[in-house]
Length: 146
Image 1 (cartoon, rainbow, N blue to C red):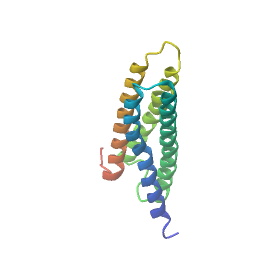
Image 2 (cartoon, rainbow, N blue to C red):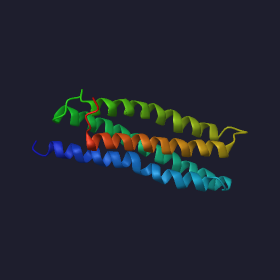
Image 3 (tube, rainbow, N blue to C red):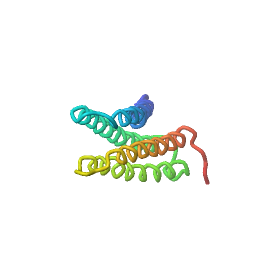
């Protein structure tokens, strides 16, 4: 029981790293996807799907460990930084599901403009990285916003 809170913090930090880190692998993968043949394209698309799935599942673990930290930790759920983090988290969850999965589905459609889709994927990745970094700042700094 003595080490439970510390263990949950550790799981939370590792899941935060896993929710952000793979996105930085996504960017060069998308860049390389622009001028490849079909078998290589399929391999890169598989890598992209694995990265997105890893980020998604790490996000689930991040939410669960964050909820456990709120239940067992010293901060109440109504603190301004917690409420702001939750709002950004909900927005980023919706953004992640629509920003990556739906865009990747369009990639396989006939007559799709693959260059435009890859540009959208890159932009989406940077926006999601930005959202995750704002949440990370809120969790580390714990600012009193109101």
